[in-house]
Length: 228
View 1 (tube, rainbow, N blue to C red):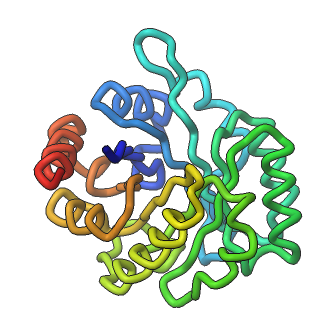
View 2: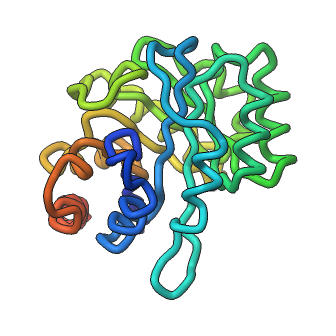
């Protein structure tokens, strides 16, 4: 049976009270915390750096002290130095865009050597062919269902076909690789996205933009459970 994970994106959180937001969304049932890192170079926006990741690390835990994974999505160029900085700051998963790295294989190896799980991210118009050559070094594949750089965008339907293709690649490999999707995820489309093969769902404004985080996360889980 597929284990689904919901990863609220801090991009839509209240940055003036980030630690409280992390704790609140975990209390509401979040599985991971998704950290969107933008550099105003690879994407036209600027968000947070390793110091913020380090600051929220102590807040990313459950009431019993169990750590909640920090899922860092690097929208930066170049990749390697910042990837290592985020690893040192407490990241658990670090993913990056292959067109932002000169040597994708080397970047993936460096992330793993730093003690983190490694991931590749594919933009809406980007083919996933490169994945074939590094699948043995990838722990996560993130399919963007919006163009990176801004929150609150609508879901791009062609991402469903890409998810289906990557799911076939992962299943054929026999490896334990998370298939994540980011962009426009809501309770009313999460089941359709899961049916295409995703098992991990990033949601920003659909959760942090609402008054009751638990109600939204519970609604998402109900949709996921309905299709089992």
